[in-house]
Image (spheres, helix red, strand yellow):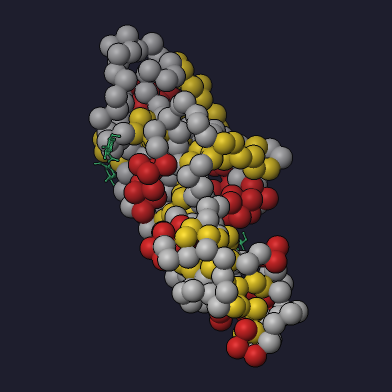
Length: 310
Ligand SMILES: *[C@@H]1O[C@H](CO)[C@@H](O)[C@H](O)[C@H]1NC(C)=O
Ligand SMILES: *[C@@H]1O[C@H](CO)[C@@H](O)[C@H](O)[C@H]1NC(C)=O
Ligand SMILES: *[C@@H]1O[C@H](CO)[C@@H](O)[C@H](O)[C@H]1NC(C)=O
């Protein structure tokens, strides 16, 4: 069991008080930390862990508090490493919540970041499968946060990924962007809640890695015209998915998925499908005894999307 060390640092930053735009975040993004947001804060530390490759400055300072103060004073700093024995202080331009997969063991070093103790404990526990990452910057629009996720080969988390992460013990988050462009998610102690836009404050994004294992299809939140194949594909792509093939819908059926018996578009043009075991359809309107599909689709429907797999 990892022990968590908290250090409370306060710093009055007159000089930085007017620095509202954070140059170290990409365009249209605002950094989480910095003096315009917080004047004092806790950093939670964990022993024998480091976040490699994000350091931008090394210092020799005699105390942990001095190292932390250097971090608070520097707009670029999101977290830091400290080794008491060597009086070594390294300032990092990112946090472990952004790069949960990267945290590694290093004897004698402490990682200190803005994460809640619960998250640091989770990250240090070894198995980081499926842990979302929370961006260090805040974004005004859904569109401007997706490229940040893509940068690390991730996508904005889907609902089921957030529900899963919450069950696995991912701690509370602020209002954050996720896959659905029309709402934001908050993880709380008791689960995930979703809030409709419009919202006023810039928000971080929750990025997830592509699912490695079988996942149920997701139905697009919006409907599309029958002929709007590009729109249908884009709707699925926003969910890190693609329009399902009949084979994929059958696989889903075999896993127990029923899709609320909704008639939706799928990969084959000009047809609709329903995951119902072909209760009323047969022959060429029944795929392998499982997926009803007809050439008489309605002109405006939502789409069955199957998650991309790596
Ligand atoms: C700081 O020092 C460590 C150990 O020598 C090194 O691995 C790291 O790359 C240095 N960081 C910077 C930003 O120079
Ligand atoms: C890690 O946890 C996931 C569930 O979150 C589990 O499916 C997986 O088997 C675990 N991996 C290891 C190596 O323990
Ligand atoms: C930033 O916002 C402006 C105006 O909304 C937009 O034109 C521009 O493409 C955005 N830049 C990025 C990188 O998203």
